[in-house]
Length: 238
Ligand code: ADP
Ligand code: MG
Image (cartoon, rainbow, N blue to C red; front, top):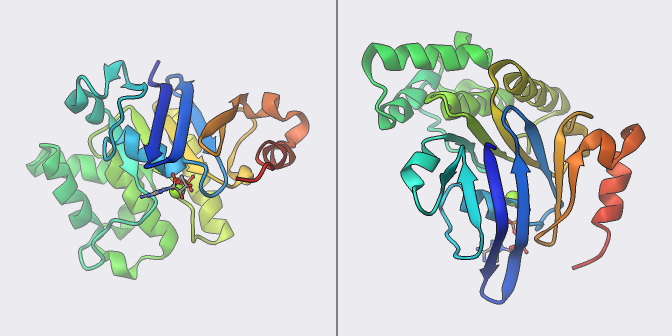
């Protein structure tokens, strides 16, 4: 099992942001973490990336316990955070080069990895452009390429399509689904948009810090009625 979350809880003071959250994403699976604003998605990402820690529950990444062997666990994830984290004045490849170096990938090996990652996201032709010159969709692709430079088996993306137009949104969603199918990547994709979910994806519906449903999209909501089902499961007010 690639990504295992077990009985995970987290509170901001009195406010319980996550309440005994458990789910497992098997290898090579695309899992949509679907939840409305305030559901706890980013809190979960902060725990998965160890920006937050908790004593309640556990996380295993590719078999490595995040609290007991954090280095091994963290080396196996690539992360795209909700807020963009690129330097606009550096070129696309410069943004990736620094990150590759942090992972011990320098020189020719680093350049080959960077070229391969940009190629996978179909932005190799923009490698020498400054990020400032790129549109939102290409900036997001740059961040995804960067997250893959060290070839992690697990990719985490927190609302990666926010602020993009419909075409760019669909392109990114398709790209990441393809990465999952072609490269055996395990993906956790946080979103509040049901149209980013394919019928064969795993869906974990999170609401008010609790898992409300977990299964294949087509089974949770037969007949493509995921949006209606999502609204029904998340209707109760805070
Ligand atoms: P999502 O990413 O699904 O929109 P979050 O994980 O950001 O949800 O937030 C989950 C809950 O925790 C919300 O009720 C939010 O108001 C609360 N919360 C998030 N960050 C903080 C914080 N730093 N301090 C206090 N409460 C927070
Ligand atoms: Mg969020």
